[in-house]
Image (cartoon, rainbow, N blue to C red; front, side, top):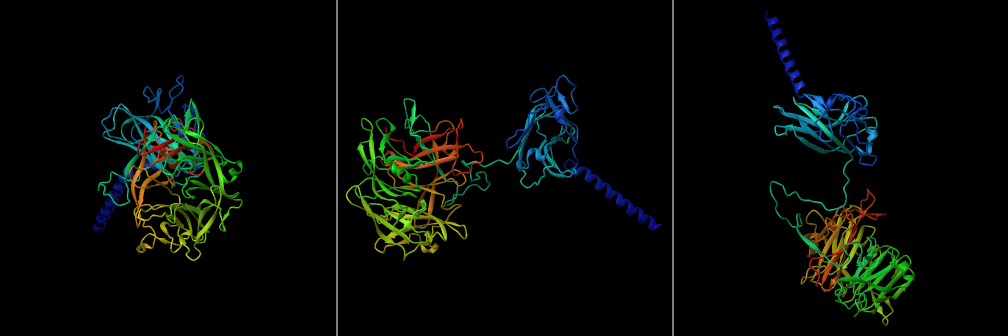
Length: 626
């Protein structure tokens, strides 16, 4: 008797556990993710938009049917977001019409992401609404591979009103095959009646386009504590200047005729080529064919004028080379041009036949001060623009050339004029005994730029940004030339290895464009750091004896419509004292590339977007004088 009673107890316990497990499975098992949703051939009764043939692919359904035929199952007539018909999902565990496609039909390359949206209508009910707009994938034997749903639930869901639901899902971790089935539908898991209309699915992950981006979350609960060189930085705005070009993409517009089209690939330099040092600078552009054009701003007309430039055609092959440097290589003169290509090297000067902005057409002549038919200087073969920089390295008031042999050695050359139209380059110093590791091309990839980075020194310093070829790490350093010792020494303290400290989330890089200028009236020379490695990044920085400090992020204002320069895929910036002798402005050249996969670098063909047309404008922190 006791054995029988014990057996009854065991069997009863097992039955209770089985009942609990069954209830749990029924209630909590995601059957909607496991079962194969019944489908219908929607093409036979739904008038739908065709699948787009360009990536990313899209599918849209408005569930409109032939009004002369009977209303098919699953279709509701009389209430619709658009048209007259919508899809039904009436009652608990009901499904709207399911749209099915082979993964290969959509394209495997487009199934790394999906954006989905629909309009949902809930009939009057006292029950809680619970549903999902679904993207699902099953393999060839019906096993679920992926289930993504936009949930539509809660007590605040509006009734008798169309409500839009939408979401984006990353599918990069889902591995699909050509014969896998993609299902799209709305699932109703509540005791309510629901209509669905205007389903819209877009396949393909969004592609990052170049432009502005936010890097700081200002909604953090703990708030914001400012840190040295950590964002956010105080923004400042450069104001667009009216240069009379009709807000177009040419520098000059007169009598409805545009001239002075400067393209992103053109070289642009600012200098006192035909004006005295310290006065208004001229703008020199050199196109890829090597043809130079000279412009000058006339304050009387408030417009730029083109200077008639007489340049010998045999200089064009050199001018379309890889090095174009502006420098004050002659004492008591304006600026000259040092150019190098595989066709040779030349130092060019400019002679003004008539002053700019005078009556009649202003004219100037390009003179050859020195020329070599070989791309070699002081025994160093020049092959790219990173082998050379120029600046007042000795502090004597004129510029010198600094050449790198690629093995850590260097040479400083000074031009010695003979009269006013000729001369020769003389060797001032050589670095055979004092090699610089950061200039050794076998160890690092580097770029060196000479400028007055620190006001404590009267001579220009050499900023070197480099990437270690072994570690891939980006670093930078500043060096100063000691005239008496004929060698370079590092400015930064030895406590951190003679390199510039990296404080913050970023450092100076090879791809940075360092832009010096007197951008603010009455203030010393400052620097802008411009980078397009990922997106628009323009900051105002300054240097000290151990690092650089980010002062501001730079934005723009005064532009037409939405034509903020930072929104352009291709944005070239050039600095010069073109509008005022003591204030530096930025020439902004903005274009968009027609290639939908453009990710920086050269662009084969530009695209004119109506809301973001090509632009060429000047921006300053201080408006130009009337």
